[in-house]
Amino acid sequence: MTGIELKEKILELVVEYVKAYPVNNGTPDMWRMPLVGFADVNDPYIRALPEVVAKGHQMPEDFMEHPTVVISYFIPFTKELADGNIGIADHAASESWADAYKITNAMMAKLNEYLVEELKGMGYRAAVPTNAGMHTDILKSFWSQRHIAYAAGLGTFGINNMLITKDGCCGRYNSIVADIPVEADKHLEQENCLYKSKGLCKKCVQNCFSGALTTEGFDRRRCYETCEKNMERYGVDVCGKCVTNIPCAFIAPKAKK
Image (tube, rainbow, N blue to C red):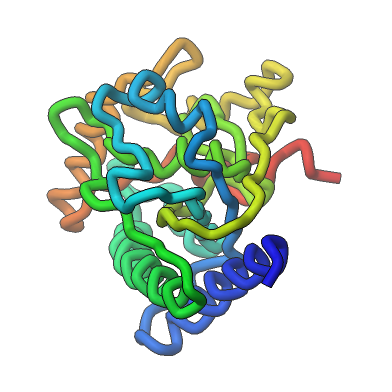
């Protein structure tokens, strides 16, 4: 199997797993077509993540010996799910949005293990990054899925701090490391954020009722306080207002006709 064929096979595995998951597990159908990207473990951007994200950010080799790539994927949410997160009383997240966060996290954990086993069956090694959650003392992840996805060429960062792919930013990211012989994808060069590219939009800033998100910066603590209110309501720290009801929710605005 060539490197191109291997990349196509991994995309197929992800797409088919996500497509079958609602039927096999009795969950709502809430996802669009996944995207998959591949980052070289020696990409200078990845090596610089302890400076870019946070000191102590983990490296691919922390999870297995001699990896060659990080396989990153994006699971986009449906418009129906996102629209349900608009106009909720007290600026709360919708119950369906909170449920989607829980269900998607559980699905991705199973998908990661599935991919690892499939790659092992092909004669390769792979591993799931551990301790990839947010460290509440600094409110940053020691394995940033969005920054890994940027390195894998899946998108560019908007002023909402989300990664905007060709299919938007409304969804979830995850990744595994592996030693497969494939060519890494290049970082995107064209800016997908309307504000960063043209000084337009700022819809995500307008949606951020807490004031955590501004064009000058991002107040991580204030954002987390909002998410904690939804934790009290739903048992999960979510919000989602900065990725719903915005031009880049489901597509990179530059791609609009």
